[in-house]
Length: 473
Image (cartoon, rainbow, N blue to C red; front, top):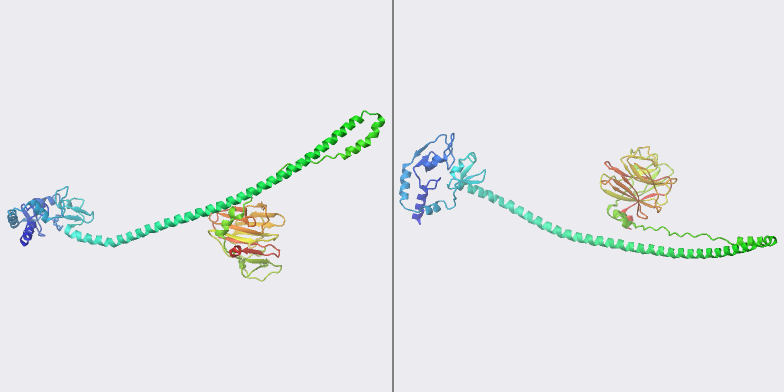
């Protein structure tokens, strides 16, 4: 075994690192590396200024080499050993492959392009200025780099696996949520269908009942007209007969004819017309119920903005009007000319819903305003920018006023008003909570802070804010 190892080492020293064949006319350069004369010439071909060593890349500025007769003699001796070329090549470089372009062993590695090179490849313009090193020195370095990437790759692998598992669980949750939503929607539509079915049956019963009543009235009216017609015929015949009598008989019959004529009363015609019917959906089907459920908030009065004749309760949910003025501190946002107050909360985004109990107050105004209203604000139902409100006046009834003015005629007198602000959509809507109907909607592109606004009027009945807990109870 020792002899074979020594022989293999001797054979390796007798081979050119460029062509991997036995040295032919070996030469040695200053760094100590040996090459075939022709191989070294091929490596330095087309080079003008710098001539690097094909192995260690040490640069030389001229072609400086010397013949090596001792190495040539050693090579000739090794050749006489008669070892098969293919076997020796496998022993010397078992992992090396051949460059397809130059048919030389791939003994070098380019760090920039990450490519295996033969010696001649390393001198091409593509790699000449790159860092090129032997495979034996490049492999350990890049092996360490690969080992350094193992943990980050494992970490990324774990993260991706966790993400996939999380996405899988989310998909399962989504399916469950979608199924729950489907059941919820089906239940809601079933409820709507049942309600509509009941409404349909009730309206049809009313129509049928009214039809029977009208037909009975028409029959009675027809009977009355038939009796009247018979009386007219008898009177006509009697008059025709008497007109042919003598003068004395005609005159004697006039009073009787007049009495019979007075007794004939023409009946009134009856109205053959059905009443108007309409289906009124409750609040939970018109959308108000869903708004209340998702967007109702706790709005409170701001005492710092209340008129001196207004008293705000300790919980800031009720406000009263008094004839006497209170001593109050000056505040730039306080109302001084009309009994009004702002909400404590302000809004710059989102959707918000609040309710106000107006009761039977003869005059009130509810809504929202932009920033601070002027100190001389009088709450007059005129066109006013930056103000969106709905109110009740003794003379004009219900009005929506602000950027535009509109008369409102609610079907049911409201005792409670709902205000819904959708900042992003640019809408302020007013609802009659008593029947769930929409009274009016303002449209505006909001860009500034919005404050709830309340005008109390000058009557003693309070204006109450309805809280979420009050609605739930």
